[in-house]
Image 1 (cartoon, helix red, strand yellow):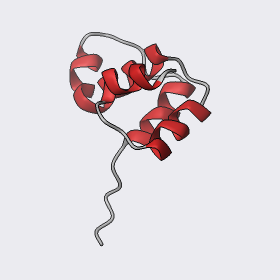
Image 2 (cartoon, one colour):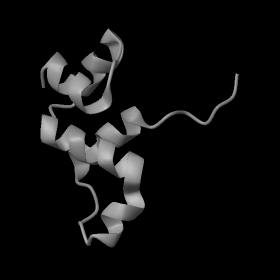
Image 3 (spheres, rainbow, N blue to C red):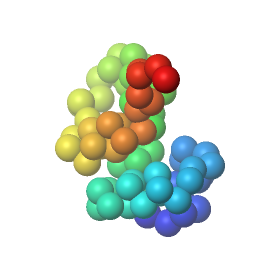
Image 4 (tube, helix red, strand yellow):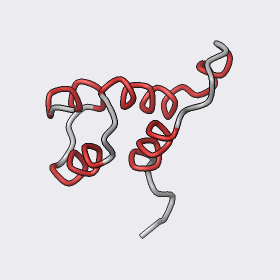
Length: 70
């Protein structure tokens, strides 16, 4: 994925996040799907889409905010 593709899908991101996303070997389409699952899972499930594949699930883990409080 290119920097521009990542930014067009998730918005501004720091270099560390971009590197982590690229290290997965996932495509921009997989990143787009992961972002959609994280931001509208119910709509995707209601549309009958299959559950995310392994690359998409990995991307979701990276993108999902931590629930830990500091």
